[in-house]
Image (cartoon, rainbow, N blue to C red; front, top):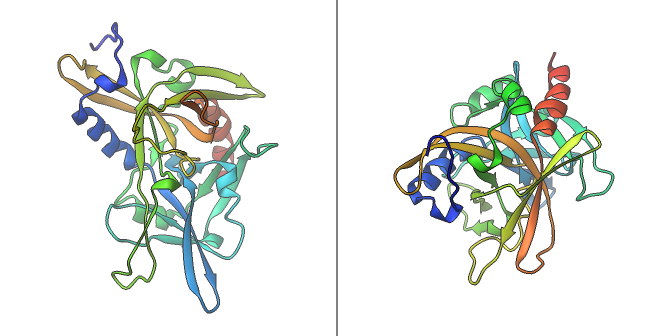
Length: 282
């Protein structure tokens, strides 16, 4: 089905496709952990949101949302998840440059975008384990002729706080939280524009003993991806390209067993965000 003439349900995707796509997309997708220090009680870390490692020109950092980045506002370190084993990769907040691209008038509404610039030396270290998605490379295509919504598999990647676990001390660490990334496959249901930014709604349906998180708090700032493919579930299907297509920033309440996750879309990413990041890094 390389010409995408047929449609299929996400539930028809073989596990091999889902596992491979998730493995690739996780390589761009860190959790953002804020580590604060209190006299007499040591340090403590908490998940503040998700992000996507991106680059624009020679500038490297994390594309996320304002309501996550605004929490980098006091003496702290920001930690990033980069491997699946015990590790601690942090950067002092004074070494990070936070660029608030769009500040929402009301929390939970758009526009809501930010960029956290990482020093070159630290980005180089992180690149041994993670990938930085080059926003320059696919920019023209994603603005003028992105793959049709119905001809790709949509995937949202982030770190739901509901899945965070607190483990016993190990490896010399007294506090060992475990953060679990999630790449859910689905579709995009509604596209619209307001005030120079574009938005995408994606429905999440809950049925029976559904394994989906009861809330997606924590994935804010993560990535919405379009995954193109070759073949079809009826035969052999495999991922072909991975295109960053949006940034999640809000969710609606569950009504009639359904909620929406709300994202910024390609215009917000490749036009609004790209222009501000490019100007800062010039």
